View 1 (cartoon, rainbow, N blue to C red):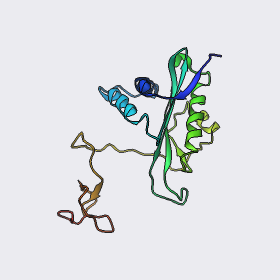
View 2: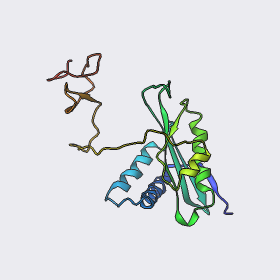
View 3: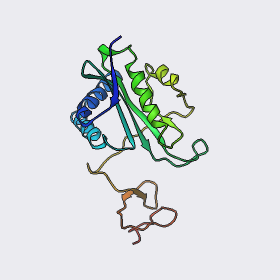
View 4: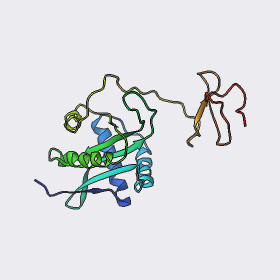
Length: 194
């Protein structure tokens, strides 16, 4: 078995995290799009020291060969998660030539140890068929309600402030930090009240 080092990622690992993310998407059959990998590297670099994130890398002979990522998300409390919040697990990936040696398991175990210190009671992830057994070994189960996604038309490359529904469900507009919303959170037609 190869000797490995399992550790928290540093700023110098942001490129390797993005490369492993690209490898993960290649394995999933996703086609390449220009620019996303640079954006992913910047995303990792900006959050590398964020206490709400945990980026674990596995090194073999000085090279990062595997990783796993966890980050805390705010969610609305629910019957299955009364305190709200969860840890999203992502980017569990290993370079092809290093697979089958337990590197992803080691990285995921470290992320799960961190997750247990965050104060939330649930972790969630999107599993591929090839990764499902790994996730089941650490306690994940298939949920009866599958994740679904819808593409959104974005009119700007800048992140928007929290959206508010403008009286009708088919229109969403930007609400600035000075806007005062009614207690039901719905902005009446026209301008937000200030």
